Image 1 (cartoon, rainbow, N blue to C red):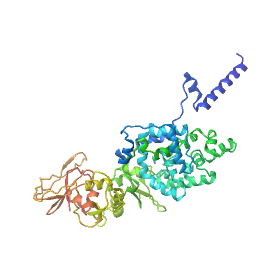
Image 2: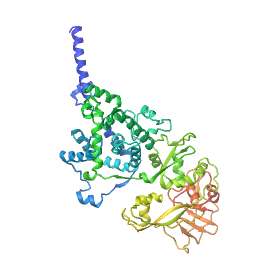
Image 3: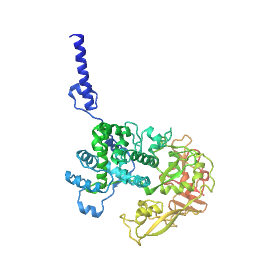
Length: 532
């Protein structure tokens, strides 16, 4: 074979390889080796849903259907309803009549309806649960910027409501901002903080960006396309299409991922508005929007320290504060950082804030710092229009607490119904009310001899504390035994000396002194310690 003919053959093969690669998006060598079928990269929309499988922020079970819906469809628990194209088209047409978006039905839209309502339905239930935490905030900001409220569903397309999901390209957060775009909209990224993952700040940035794109294109479908691939890609597609100005007309000239982006958005609008028809119900999140609140942090603090003094699991603090990358909330005098906490814990944090900082610095807290929060029982009379969620929000507790305190079997309450609630008030009393699940032992009951323990000098195991006498003739209320010389407190699971000191109106140092605790000590559930 001549050299010239060899080069011609090489060029022909090379051109064939390039053609195969351009058609499949995969290296041509993979296609020619054994005539393998084309393998495309995973759909980023499906990948975002898959990330929810690792999110540990849900209670067991799902929101049960109401009696009306259950009676209408009679679906079995494991039923996966499917419908004809005509049904999908009719339902979308009804939604389209009430929306500024062009909610058109086609095969691409049907494919994503199948993704959300059939193949990934369990993960969609999780996204529905997280929407109870984020949608009220998102809707408020969309309304402020005069953006259609349907745009809230873009979060499900982008991130499946997972604030810490990261795309293959490096986009982060609920709204999947790239680094450069985030910086343009004042989202800071430092060694400790990534505000692209801050639910509130990133939503503000997303609203500003969407507003900018709408001023540029004047069409919400094109805004969605530009949000995904950038306004430059959309302008190029418009030019290549010969000046067309609708998404469906320029779609062939857009990147492949963007071609499926708008159909996915239409499908999410449909599925989220017809969850009952598809037997989809939300997983129960640990907290909803109305059960959390934020405070400003005045000193640097870690998640582990917050967990210790507030008795909140570290993973819950992490989920509620996804913008902090290393479990540390830094301090800035110019713009103090926010801390999101369960609403029931915010009062304790604010009331004892300086004491918490002192404790973290290993400074001796004063009696004023650790002023006890007295728990008071009140009777709430249900008013017309109230429900357990609004009542729990008012008293800074959870729906579970209300149901437990009042032995409720359902989430339904009626006007005029009386509910027992327990609230924290600042005071000096250390005798809290007795809740339904607690028992009062007769005052004549004799306590068994108590042997207190502490850590051995080596830190391995425990040893008896010398000089502690057994106590008789006590009365126990909520784990506290009153004696003539003081009190004995029974350690509960998760208790810390900080929590005990705050509850009993004393100090950590005083408890250590009374019980001869050294630098190393062990608190065991069921163990009894002296408190003044």
